[in-house]
Length: 104
Image (tube, rainbow, N blue to C red; front, top):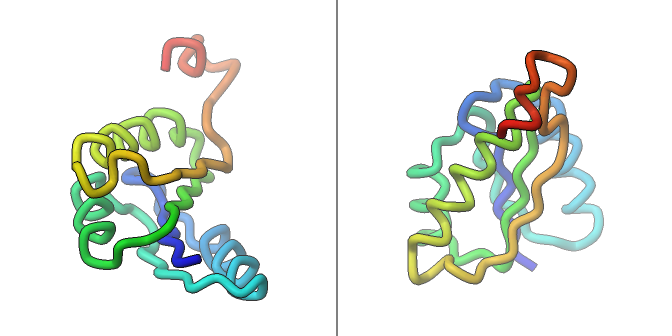
């Protein structure tokens, strides 16, 4: 499978992306790594360019739910990526901090 691997818009962490990239490549996947701080606009452009079989989004900073939701909405708005499988993982919320995770 060709997989686009990406961080989320507000997440500057890279170690998670390096690890996931190696993990996926060791299992025979072709990985297009976009890196950290990827905006929904950049992600959709990369999907148009590379025509992946799936997208993997990773977050460490605790804003993954909000950022991934924006990214998936942008992908779903494009006819080419409307049905593209997307896996999201990492620290997706900041539970315990003013109810932010529940409101997201």
